[in-house]
Image (cartoon, rainbow, N blue to C red; front, side):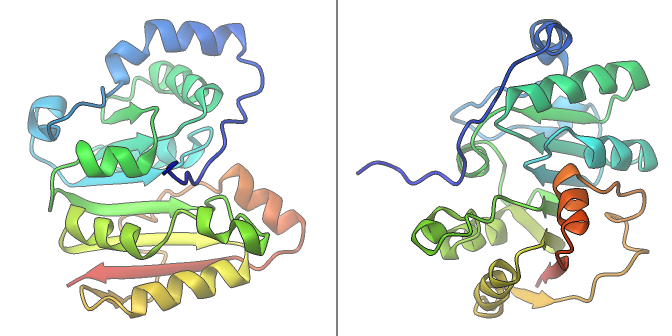
Length: 221
């Protein structure tokens, strides 16, 4: 059976700067998708808290967090190459060294490459809502995906998700409340993974359209 994907590659046109970044900078900042789990201590050259952002878009938030928290390591996953190229240029210009990127399907990266119990936080900001009911099966957050999150987070680790689609927020809340591995945690502005957070392009668009943003946070028991 054909695998149901939660994304469509709407890449548009790569700028020359983005194309050059993918060619020259991705070898330094990129993570290859392999059949064995990554060794984060070897990749980053240290032991540190690790935060994964799924679908970082143009990388505004990932860059802001990495600069605000040099004591942490950040992994970003994004399938759209223009966004990856954009972030690569900004990482190089800012001389940021605590970020690594994978330009692949997040579900496959989590399953194959991220070691179990290795992440302190997983961030998912404004995933594609697939608003039509017949497309809801393509939403990233499904029961099996929540199980995958539970495997990859350390005990006490945090899953934080935000969306401006109320029915998607309700769907996520139902799934998470059904998993005994997670407990709801009221989000606060002082949480380490929110200090320095930058609004994403989709967040700004949703607010401009008058949508209510729901931010949900869960701690791994």
